[in-house]
Image (cartoon, rainbow, N blue to C red; front, side, top):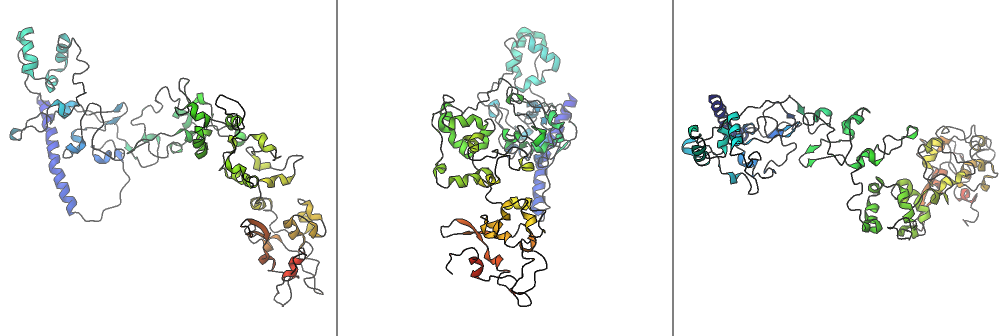
Length: 547
């Protein structure tokens, strides 16, 4: 008992000593300079005494505690040091450790001389009316032999936390066991020291790593049964870092943050060229058989039309479970299920006259949910090339036998990206026929004005400048033009630019500013660099301009 009293005395000394510490600390803060050092990264150190800094990284509100049957607020205990009640880190491998009631009785119900009770000892002040005060161990037969055996094993002091000995114990004992004597009429506050766990530092704002989790989660694969089949080990064997799935610490002031299913699809179902799938997309690989895969909001009404809003705003949500083939039959007006209306789904923008010219860009941009209605065959009616292009297509995308290269232009109207790749090895080549006609047969036509492709025609008229005089009677040029004579930086300056016409639409036209850099300009000897100044250049091809 003496040892117990010593513990109680030390505990109270610590609790009430904290009152003085708080006021002294407040005084020091008020006298401290206004400038403070930069905030350090929060750290939870399990070896240190518990204080509020260990809690606020995850518990922004340390006010009322949401525990069933308990009325408790940290705000009523601010003058007591945290380790006065929490002798060690409350979050442990077997769950969250609640402060035992004997710690509460270090203050509650204790009279301190003339000061009276340190804190209330009335049960209803700390417990809600619905809380069952009688412990589960106190069954119907508890008042007989079971309670006597418990008292022999651990003593009667613990009973006095709840029982008033003269009324609850002594009256019955006088009848049943007259020689037992009276029970103690007060409870002596005894607190059994509890050993601390290993010294671990956790950085809740730092990168997530296994060491941040295993202190509390000794079995990281202990997931809620019935919903998910998951093993960290399989992911660790592939050398995935924790931050790949957990970009931030899983516990913060807003609650527990779990990776959502969409983040799983960054690997599951993803094809990595010839290596195949990175991870399986089969539902039963991650969800047990008893798990209902169908979300609760997928009602008959949702299937018949209400899903349109969600699918239109977030098609990636639907694509997590549904392949485009699931949608196509119904959207094309086929009666593939009871939910099918039998009518095709035709969006309003598809009815506009310019849709055919616009839809390629929308598809390439990924902003249209084309796969909800269109399968490969619906694309092939216009596009002879395989659509959509399979994985690895760019590595060898030469037109298939029987498919004209012009088929690419159905979508790829802007060829600048093609030029940067296809012409990267010709940027300094001489502009002569032999360097061009190998890929562009049309450029063989003579005269160049017969070439229908304007870009080819513009280049072809410059093929023979090396043997043609700059001006009548002058000397031939020493060499042909090179591609980078005009295409400075190659790919950054084009001989054609898009200009808005009178109708406001962009149209491909000549950038005559580039042409007049030579045509009609004089060299340092005051001689024409190239003939046909001003409108004469245009009249070479456009004979009907009337200028």
